[in-house]
Image 1 (tube, rainbow, N blue to C red):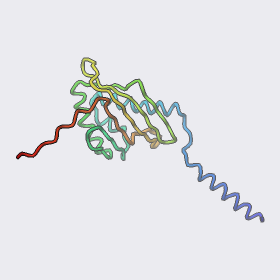
Image 2: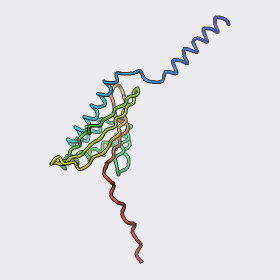
Image 3: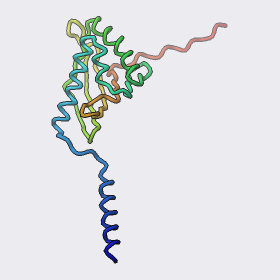
Image 4: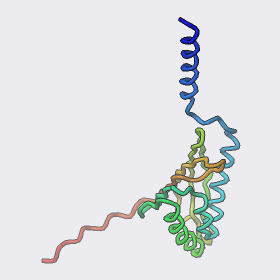
Length: 168
């Protein structure tokens, strides 16, 4: 094999190896987990204060919010609209969202997820709802932003209404 072929072959192998490294460089896992938990803490603080704009600011421009019993809110404008109403009503009713003791965080490059539990308490601190959340985050320009978010209640759903019968 001549020298030129060896150089071309070596350069080709080096290029293939470089292209095969598709994962993002590993960050500091504990710092990433702490930053993700800080996003969740900021979410609860803003929501409990009725500050829907601050809650929405934690989401990316193209995020999708999937709350229970309503259509998904796609994009930041729809998410701002949703939280602008919901957070204010929640705070005005005297309810408080409390992050549960169970919180798992996973990080893979610039993507992360957080699985959590929550309770909602009333003014007397009685639990009126408990459930689970799943939040997916992406690191954008060095900042963790929510890109997908959903939750559900542990409560048993109300029984379905009996079908209406046509009048005779």
